[in-house]
Amino acid sequence: MNLRPLSLCLLITTLLAGASPGLASNLNQQLDIQPRNATQGAARDVADQWAQLGHQQATEGDLAQATQSWTEAVAIYALLGDTQAQAQIYSALGNAFVALGQFSEAERAFQRRVGTARVNNDALGVVFGLNNLGSLHLSLGRLETAQTYFEEALTVAQPTRDANAIGLSLSNLGLVALRREQWEQAIALLEPATNYRLLGGDNLGEANSSNHLGEAYLAVGRESNAIGAFRVGLRLGAEAADRATQLRAIDGLLTLYFGREDFATAKPFLDRRAALTLNTPNPDAQAALTLRWLGDYYRATGATDNARTAYTQGLTIARSLSLKSLEAEFSNRLLRR
Image (tube, rainbow, N blue to C red; front, side, top):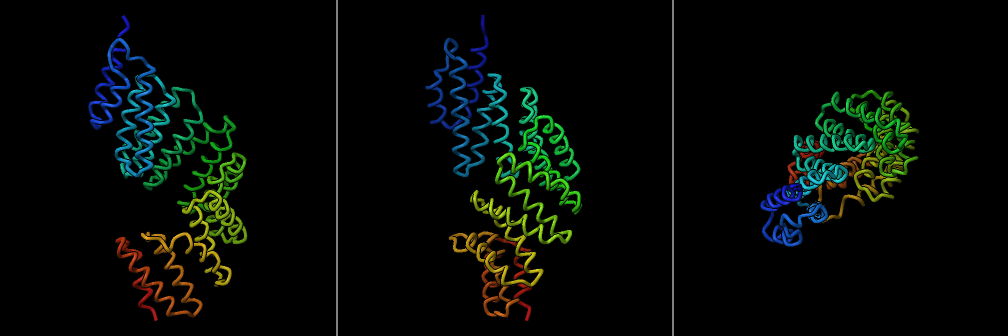
């Protein structure tokens, strides 16, 4: 007697019991859960629908509900023995938990992602899961742990000869070196990282690595190299319509040109920053930072009234967002004569 269909339908019935009444009823009807017909195909349909619902909820910004849906999906995939689907869901869960600030849950999800990839002999899955774990620890300031994960990822990636896997691992190791202010070590890691990401066709990844590289070049006084790296980051970020990447490149260029007091060259990049961040109905922290740059530009070029206007507008945004450090910066700038 085959008991697997019965155990499968009992698990799914338990999972559906925690769902919203409408969704649970709909999925129950589609599955028609009974011992005689609870096949893997029907169960997979339910798991796929939970997964799809989670992606829809995440797209709508409801990450808490998305994690619940993905948890339902991954439990069914686990019973079906579909490690590939499990790995994909664990990645989604980990990223969602990071966004929610639930770091312990994120770590568990990424660890399971690595574990299922190992079971599946999926070397690339292991690499990307280890990089997820390293990035999580890096964001929490745990540099030693992050480096350990990134080094293991690189070790696993190199035999695969996969340019994206190697490039990502090198770039993350370079980022650890940046955090430690080990500039030459960062350059030694980030230069090949950008090349690998170029070879892999990962434009946004190349942009991020280029921005990291620009920061390292700037720190050691290689300004021409820094300009080139930041310009690559800006161009690729614009092609990908990725605001954060563009802003990081622009800030690198503004830092360099303001340091040279070359405000004429800085102005077009300042205008690009303004276009990306201002004139929105709900100004964010980046809008406040743009106003800080604008105020500094106007003050440096003698337009003191414009500078005060920019600082005052920035102060209003900083206060509305409870950005205490920025609020203090604007207040101090307004006190200057």
